[in-house]
Image 1 (tube, rainbow, N blue to C red):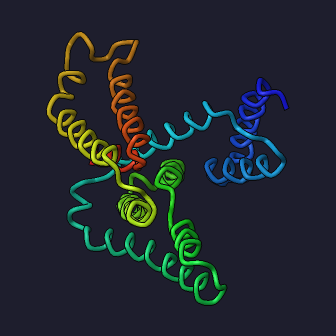
Image 2 (cartoon, rainbow, N blue to C red; image 1 turned 120 degrees about the horizontal axis):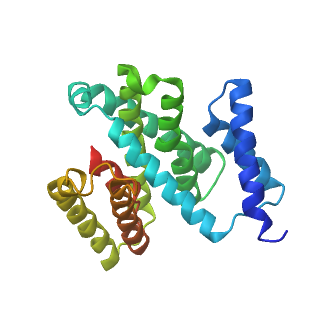
Length: 236
C-alpha cells in the first residue's frame, strides 16, 4: 500500500467510527479502538508521524482529563479514589502474573509484562467516555476519573521499576518536568491573563499549552519515561 493512501484511509475510518458510534450508541473511543484493531489485522500500518501525533493526542487528553478533576472532591474522597484505583491495578496485575508464571510456565519477565499490560487502563479513553455520556460533571464520574489516574500511576511506576533502565536522561526528565510544572504554575497567568494575548483569534493560550506538553514528551523520550504523568500533575 502506498504511504500517501494511509492518512486518507485512517481519516475515512475515523469518520466511519463517528457514524457507527452515533448509530449504535457506544462511545466513539471504543469504536475507534475496535476498528483500529481490525485495520491492523488487515495490514494497515500507520506512518511514524501518525504514531507521534497519536502519542501527543493521548498526552493532550490526559491533560484535559486533569482539568476535569475536582481537587476538592478528590481530597475529600481520597480514600475511595485511592483504594478503587489501587486495587483495580493490583488485582489484575497479581492475578495475571501468578497465572502466567505459575500455571502457564511463562518466564518471570514475560509474566510481569503480561500482568502489567492487562492491569492498565486508559485515562484518555475513560475521560472521553465520561464526557460523551455526561458523567464527567457528576460526583461519581469525577471519582472514577480520579481512580483511573491512580491506576495509570500504578502501571507507570511498575513499568519504570521493572523495565526502565535509569540513566542521566531519566534524572533530566524528572528535573525538567518538575521545573516546567513549577514555572508554569507560577507564571502561566502572564499568558492567560495578558490583555494583548487573551481572547485572540490566533489562540496563543492553546499554543502555550501545546508547548508545555511537547516539552514533557521530548524529555520523556530522552529519559524513557511517561509524559502523561507530568501532564496530569500540571493541572491537578
